[in-house]
Image (tube, rainbow, N blue to C red; front, side, top):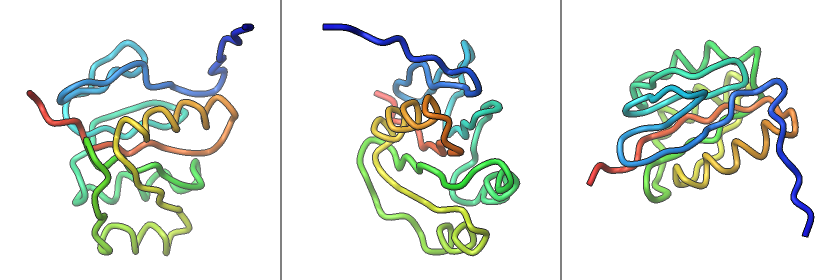
Length: 120
């Protein structure tokens, strides 16, 4: 079997995650996180909508990680994003991390907006 190394020439991949944290570009972000091609920072949850809207010129859609399992996303969160032209795909956070890494390796204009996994 031949393995192909993934090159992230213009992106910041998610290196790892665990209970309560995400590791991006060698740095730990505790709690929720927003990751996009140009960097990463903490995210305050559904009330922190403006930080995603500020990325609208850099992204076409977000992968919303809802935690350990896929859960419903409030319409008050989805609505303003869709009105701004930002698509929202929601899934469990581990799936969102993996999908994000694949999409940014392909050069897609996407951000991962992630709720952390529950701390054990």
